[in-house]
Amino acid sequence: MRYGHIGSFLVKWLGTVAAVLFVGLFFPLFGVMNLLQAVLLGTVITIVGYVADLFLPRMTNQIVAISSDFAMATLVVYLANFLFPGLRVTWTFAIITGFIVAGVEIFFHAKFVESTGKRETSP
Image 1 (spheres, helix red, strand yellow):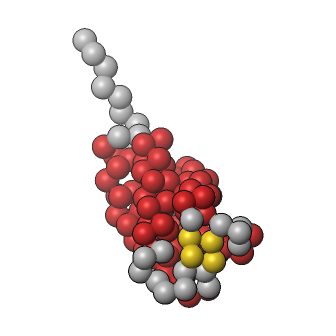
Image 2: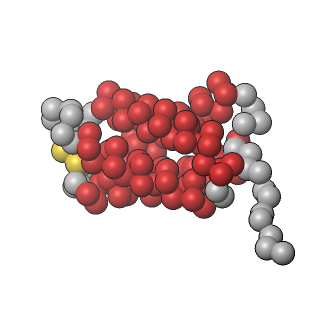
């Protein structure tokens, strides 16, 4: 991480919470959530994704890391449906949220995440 862990985490958190809020506000046909639920979901997605970002880009590549962020965000949003009373989320809502979080992650990984950039070459 180039900008320190606190700065990188805050940028990731702001982008993720903004993405979850965006989906919650502009796609009400597929799911309903309030501000507190969106912030809590964004925080959980950020914590799990940040820990994964410490290891995945170094072991694999950015595409795998962003794909795992998409899958993780989709699952967290859908599974939150069973944890929060009053939260109604469909698979469509969760997938849209996953795509938007993955879009935010593309920019986050380009600016804040370092990968090794090494490729194994066969002899």
